Image 1: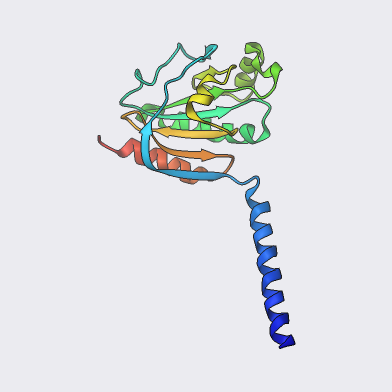
Image 2: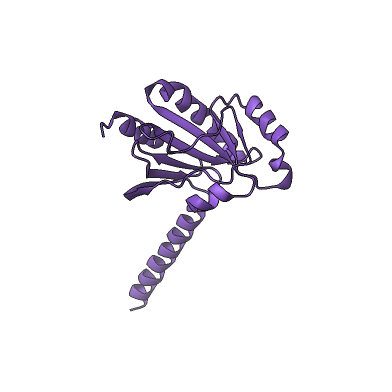
Length: 183
């Protein structure tokens, strides 16, 4: 009996440790979410300033695949994703991909256009960046994370999202899949 109780206790303790490990591992982990049922992408709204571009609308971009990247220039996780995002822009811009960076500030000084412009230059970003100082577009998307990617198909529907760093191959595969679709 004692041996059986000891085994049950050991198994319970190992399960608790494994569960705690999963919680700790997922606390900062990236999350990719293929959308089960696509839904119309919200329009860009409340944008204070457009950098690297004239103002854009999703209606104008219908027929293109659009990657929306919510970021802020002092977020280390965002900084880590910028080379990948710029790489996708360069690699697929002539194949129908439009990348839109939506800069949504975490701190007051990140609202300054000159600071955002300096960050765009520092990180060598060539795609359009919308300054969302009042979280209007952020809220329209129901976003909660920096960085966050939303992939929009040629019909204007959100078909994929990814939160955090990593899973770059998966995100790029989703981009390629949407570019290849003939709708």
